[in-house]
Amino acid sequence: MKTPPVPGAVAVALSRHPEPVRARLLELREMVFAVAAETEGVGPLTETLKWGEAAYLTEASKSGTTIRLGALKSAPGDCAVLLNCRTTLVETFRTHFADSFAFEGNRALIVSTTGALPREPLRLCLRAALTYHRRKGTVRPAMDIRPAEQAAPIILGRPKLPPFD
Image (tube, rainbow, N blue to C red):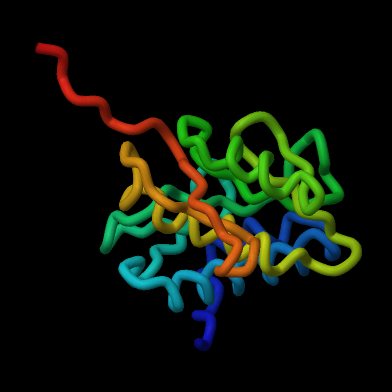
């Protein structure tokens, strides 16, 4: 999959970051597009700015929550993958990937600009965000990093309960 050119406004926003952060953000951007392309039901992404940061929306399919890429004041030399704080995504990622990422509250995974990018955990996190609305409010398998023969479903969110009579 060929990553589309960076839109002008997004390029300007990315140019405000120091080189190591900008380079890693571009790597993350490429991964967002690759994961979207290989994930059934996601469809094309809309790339825009939200709060001055590069943002990726599933406007056509409405399958996922917005993913923003930027840096945080608490970790200005690193990158952040920011998600809607009203989702359970960061909480779930913290449970399963505490060794791969640092986190800020319930809104961001912090990705180091040094060392190897934790590709597989990041791909799983991005896929979960890009398909969040397809699963929201139901009991569903989400992601598991173990081999398929050892995998057990991971539950995101809360199951919908039947109404009381």
